[in-house]
Image (cartoon, rainbow, N blue to C red; front, side, top):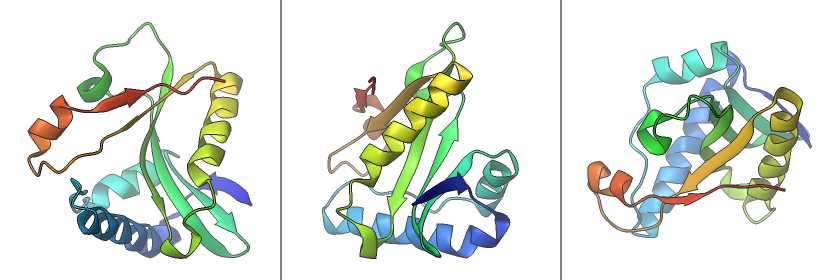
Length: 143
């Protein structure tokens, strides 16, 4: 298992995984991800904010990090934080506890650079994103 920054050459797989994750959410009658603009993902890759977990030569999981997220967390200027977003697991690799492994990685990354790790999860059926954002479940991971 290797965790490293995604590369521009990974774009087709990244969007394949986003599509598969959205399809999975739809199949569970959950709020699903919109189609993400390629420019946004390219910028994340260029800023080293897009990550991947590989097994052998296969990308098993991807996610993005942000160093701020005022929409979700409000203004936390005094708290250095790393936010985990859009964790997507390849359908062939589900059930291998990648979120736990990513959380462990993020905590180590945070310790190294002085960040607190934050992530959020939403579960529900509303299709309106504004309603969704008002009902987000917040879970702060700390070890």
